[in-house]
Amino acid sequence: MERNKLKAIIFDLDGVITDSAHYHYLAWKELADELQIPFDEEYNEKLKGVSRMESLELILMNGNACDKYTLEEKEAMAEKKNDNYKELIKQITPEDLLPGILPFLKELKSNGIRIALASVSKNAPFIIDQLQINEYFDYIADAASVPNAKPFPDIFLAGRDEFGVESCECIGVEDAKTGIEAIHRAGMKAIGVGTPDQMTEADLLTTTDKLNLCEIRQYFNMV
Ligand code: BG6
Ligand code: MG
Image (cartoon, rainbow, N blue to C red; front, top):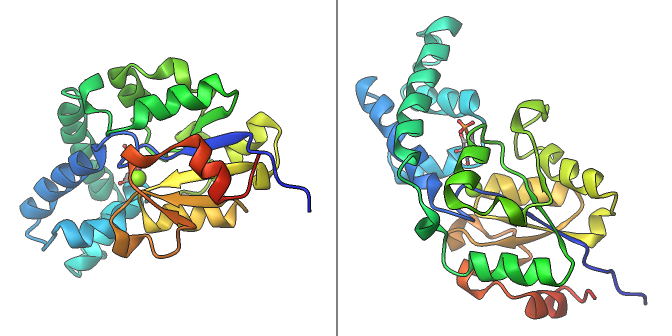
C-alpha cells in the first residue's frame, strides 16, 4: 500500500504554541466574577477552541443567565473581556513559546513541510507577532472570514485548501477536545497536546517538547 506523504502541519495557537489559553481563562474569569457566575478552570475546558460569543453563552449558561441580557449587552460583555485579554497578551514575548515549539517549527521548515495556523482567535496574528515566529508560517487562517468555529472543520480546511493538498497529507495539532473533533471532521490525523482527559480522541497524545518529525512520520506511517 502506498504511504501518504506528509505535506502540511496545521497548528492551533492557544495552548499549543503558547499558553494564551490561560489568559483567555483569566479574562473570562474576571467577567464571570463580575456577573457572579461560577467559573473555574474545569469549566473553562469547554471554552477552548470555541468562538468569543459562543464562549460567553457557555458562561451565561452556567449561571442560567442566557436570557437575562440583550444582544447589545452581550456584545459589550464580550468586548470588555477582549479588552482585558488584549491587555494581558501584551506581556507575551518569545520566551513564552511552549517547550519544543521553536525547534519543531524549524525542523518542519527545513524539511519542506508547509506550516499553517488554524486559530479561531481574532487576536492570533498579534500573538504570533509578539512571539516573533511569523516567518515560520506559510499561512495564517483569518478567523474573521471562517464561517464556523471549532468543532466545525472550516479553519483546518482553510489551511489545506490554501496549500492545495489532501486532508490525508495534513496533520493537525490541538490542545482542545473541540479542536481534535475539528481536525477529524477535516479528515486529518490529530496530535493532541492538551490535558490527557480532554485528548481521548487524539490519534497521538504527546507534549509539545516531544514533537519530532521523524517520530510523527513513523507513527502515522507517512513519508
Ligand atoms: C480560541 C480559544 O483559540 O479562540 C478560545 O481557544 C477563544 O478560548 C477563541 O474564545 C476566540 O478568541 P478571540 O481572541 O477572538 O476572542
Ligand atoms: Mg487551543
